[in-house]
Length: 419
Picture 1 (cartoon, rainbow, N blue to C red):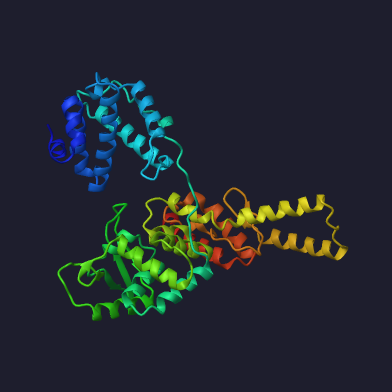
Picture 2: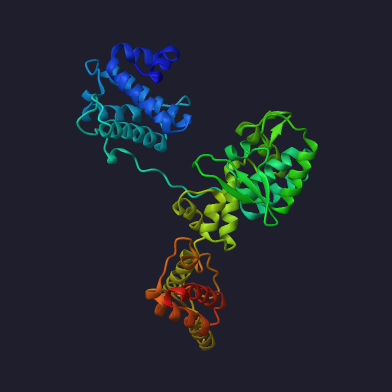
């Protein structure tokens, strides 16, 4: 019996019952949990423990003859899926789609790994298929609009408690996750090349990063450090000498939100709000990803969907045509002339791409201007010089100075390779 299972037998009656009725199954699952504990965070191990325990309890209750993992087949999985659908939470509601996906996904990974690792109690094939996992919902980030965010920050500025103001300002101006905020170390504030930065501890995605600090935050943090005596917690933020957690942060934010009259606000909403504000004002996707500590750009691209100007532009174009069907008056000759001039001006301002053009009207800003060429993963070489020269000249002819300078810089970097 592995160490993980031994501990579980002492503390969890459910595991003890599984081990009594199906000792080989319990031993295999315990061995697996013991292995993933080496590479996963404790919270992930606990989640896997919970998923396997519930699944094993279902197997021994519905099919007592199945006492090992190797005997589990597709029929057991289909029966378990029906049980999950019928299961209810404490409030009487069905399990959420994401919960179903998480449980079946962990179960599928369990089977995949013990087969890959050559466990003697592994089934001949994975009985959980990828199609068993329900498609996860992909809601857009919930954020505060600019007036609401402004009211919240004004209420924080007027709060008599400097700690509450500091917590809200940090969340709103850095985009920290609440776990990252609570885990900030005492020496998290650093100064590099004349700028102040906040070192964010390794967290959810196992990555370490530095976040630039707003001057106002620097003042608030300095004032807080002067007020609060040193202690042995090793944390930047603490309340009366005790560490804070997500519940303390939630209460602080709700109190300030109530004073602002904006209703319930969560810490993660402030993270979404900062990202949305940044992308609406032209900050590059890669920079936002670094700021928020995203592992992939796919996570950051959700914010681009909130203010998709391409959708707005094409919708407007279609709306104009639909309005014409409903008898909208035909434009006067002068209107036609103005429309023609606009089309000519847009044609002149078209952005040359590698394989075509961007037809964005000049009146519309674009958050993705030069995104490809300024991306950290953009690569080019001498063989692309003719195309880069053409793009540089195209931008210069149309007074697109930013793009012209960008291509000049790229061409300058390539000069040593052309020598």
